[in-house]
Image (cartoon, rainbow, N blue to C red; front, side):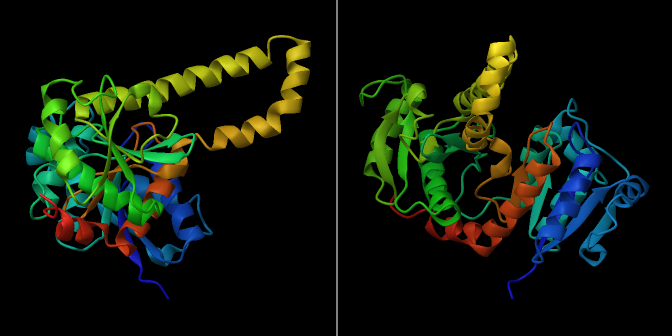
Length: 337
């Protein structure tokens, strides 16, 4: 029997809290027997939500009561320092003290990122932990690293992002010798800004990764690379454009299919095939974005995350723990320099 993984879920974080985080936790323990969930937040509110899920395994549910909530608009550093009894800080401290294996939150991105580094702490040798979501492509998925944690990254940071991303893709996604590429404004080695030009030869010389060169933004959806390396400003622009374009295309497709009687009849014919195709580009099934390179696992989901995304983030934590990703990163981070 596999070891039970304890996952802390921030029940007060996100636009749909506490309903969606609690629903996700109930679904996770119902579907898998190797998960124990600890919900942080207002005890009365959480227990009221839990009453809806009578079939859930209550012995694998725990509530860690908190009295404070960090709001999205609050300055993250100040909030982490002042709100010691918030659902985010209490959850991160449980991971730090090894009372839990992982922490999942849809709350304040800044607070989760700051708290992950300040409270949980970086693994030895890791300079800057990056936020690394999986994004759908024509070939399956790619890891975008970094997408929000380090706007002013240095070349050495990007090299570490490539190493950590390679470990994640090999052991979590199952891609052997994953292809690594750096985001650039052209395929040629001499292209790019100062950061890219300085990082390129370092990645090329790094023995621990399968570096294939530059990748232009238009080639990302095709699955040209498995690990896409960039600093957080560029990564966040890519991620938000990806999500926004997908939502716009879906809206236009639905509008076109409902335009008139003929289009509605055609929609009925193509609906099954279209539904299957669109499933492949559903980002919620991949869970959240882990903050790689910490001493414990911290996963950030979208602020508007549904219970499905949060549940899959919980499952993601189990795979992360069972594959000992943090230990592998700590072991290999300084190899090949």
